[in-house]
Length: 64
Image (cartoon, rainbow, N blue to C red; front, side, top):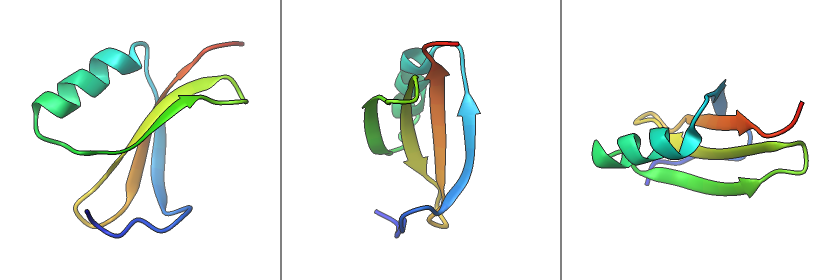
């Protein structure tokens, strides 16, 4: 797995259906770097790592 130090985020993207997106990403051979449960700040999210070691986080806002 590429090196992904803490806080090496490239971006966070909010989506309407994170479970469907995660399934599509896995079907294309992308590795999930970290699956995260619902956060304290009201987001369900997961992260992938790019080839150059940066993380992209995808999340669904649970509350407004």
